[in-house]
Every structure is written in structure tokens, then in C-alpha cells.
Image (tube, rainbow, N blue to C red; front, side):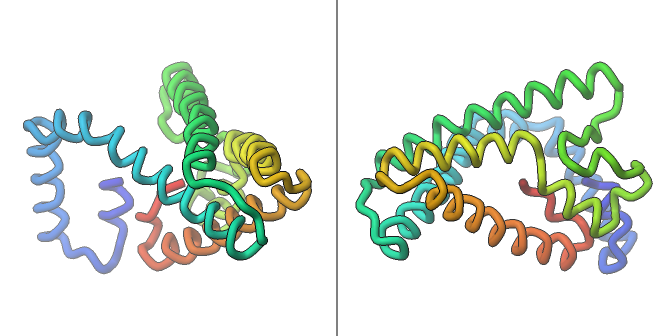
Length: 180
């Protein structure tokens, strides 16, 4: 992340030096333990936001009737696919010694292309993300009693909207916005 920030033309060298200093202090200080403890809270909040968006979309926009609690449960259970993604990426990183592992369609591109728009776009088509969305669509179809096709259109439509926002923010920030 520091490398990406240092390449950003809007960040001056003095600012970059201060950011690097703060990063070292944070990494070695008490805040690293606080981050470890607060991560489950942030993940839960993120899942709650996803479940709320799906509840709104399914109930209001598509005329379904489902409880937030059920959709939150589906969101949490599909979150285990992200855990498998993290484990696979960690193993691949340890085996290759390179933390920049692509588990997406971007694997067909050269590592030199990682800053290109095409790489960023293809990287959105992560194998684990696709698996997660298929499972999520099946879960939503069961809860809402929608057809799997209708649920898949909803899930992939929301994903496409999020991807468009992500690509815009990624371009706007010079590649610093790397959230999946």
C-alpha cells in the first residue's frame, strides 16, 4: 500500500515520509493489537451493510418479503468463502514468496500490467467472489422464494454496481482503493 501511495502524484515526499513513520509506529505499537481485536467488529458491520442492501433490494425493489436476520445469516455463512480465499491466498503467497497472487481472470495478464484498468477490471472477476455470489444467490432464492435466476440477477446486479463504484474510486485514488 505504501508503494501505491508513493506513486500517487498528489502525495508530496514530505507527506509520504510522515505516512511511513506513522505506519511503522502503528505496526509496532498497541494499535496493532487493537486492530486485531476490532477486525471482527468491522467485518460484522460490513456484513450487516451487505445484508441491509440485499434486504432493501429484495423487499422494496423486487417485492419480496424476508427478514433482515435471515439475510444477515446467509451473508455471514457465505463469508466463510472469503475465509477460504484468505487461506488459499496465504498458502499461495508462502509457496511463491510473492504476496501479489491473482485468483481472478487477471491471472492471464502479465504482472507488469497490474496498474492498468484492464487488470483492475479482470481482477474483479475473482474465482472466490464468483463462487460466493452463486452460493449467495441460491440462499436468497430459498429465503425469498424467488427463482434462482431472479436471485442471481439481483446478486450479480448489486455486484456489478459495487464493481463500478470500486473501479471509479480506484481510478480516482490512483489505485489506493483496493477493497474487494
